[in-house]
Length: 289
Image 1 (cartoon, rainbow, N blue to C red):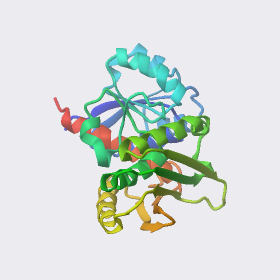
Image 2 (cartoon, helix red, strand yellow):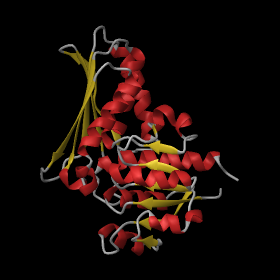
Image 3 (tube, rainbow, N blue to C red):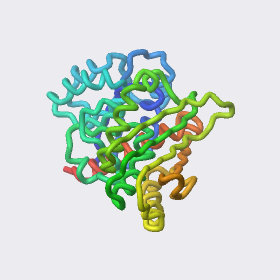
Image 4 (cartoon, rainbow, N blue to C red):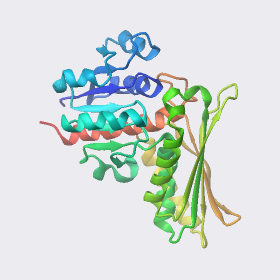
């Protein structure tokens, strides 16, 4: 197996956790870790791992466009738009970790095959990766879903500056993904940054307003989906199995991280980063040459 060379733009929590996960991959090799400040904690971690680093942002790839096969963009939605204008011309495969909505929205357990043929793959959001597989199943079994709401709570310490800067985009992209995959008429996404000590694990609750729920069938499908997602996100867990109350289906998910960069409470890093690595690895497997 020839490893695909990847570059990561963004040295914050997401980018640094992603780097550590890629280091374990049998299919990927990080050849360049890019940020803007060589003294940042993420840069220090990359240097300690012996990874080549740059503080020149997108210019580092412009100067050496042949350095990598895949680019993970872990910056901000605004920066990702600018980066894609450049990376598209350079013919790069981009896995977008930001809620920029530029490429195809990807949930590996649902549409992996359709996603890995795209040039720009958007990993939506951490809340989207946690909730949309369940919303997809609800939509698969039910028609005329009036409304789906997803509420995610994450530890405040796990949300870096880019995540906080992107809160509006987070809401928009998560809602777009929920509607797209479930065919619900309306969707609402909420993200709570919980400052509690000790830090809480990531939890996401999905509410779906509909009539005539197929709870028994949904339970079977949810169990299958959990098993599928756990293959690439080991800490993905069903906290409350599907129930129907007050005219709504309710399902609750918990995600614990692997503790690669931040402690295990940071399941929001794992749910999106593990999904992104799964996509990149499948691309590598399908494109051996």
